Amino acid sequence: MKRIKEACICQTLHFMLKEDVGHDYAVKLVKDEIEKYKAGLDKNKTKYKIVEETEQPNGSVIMKIIKQYNTAPVGSYLD
Image (cartoon, rainbow, N blue to C red; front, side, top):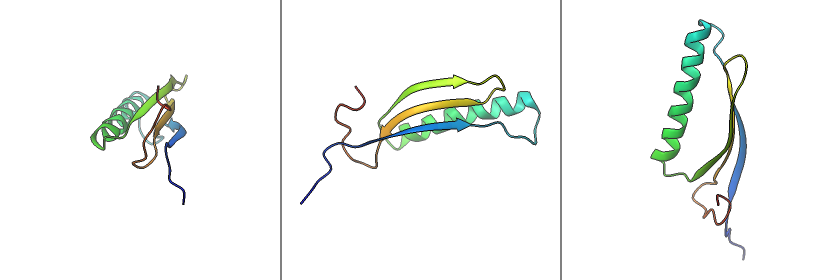
């Protein structure tokens, strides 16, 4: 029998600008979406570590994150 001892998932997320709204408003929406995403992780008690968060020249944001996989223990992945 096997059991998961530690598990995390690495993701690269691209928070892209909406195309059907003005640029400044689209940038604001991206920032709001990022805050909502982080709040959702906190609300669900998902352990995570943001490795990199880079704003692109057009205002979109690329985020590299390591986060808990389901409810598995994270061990030393987030140290």
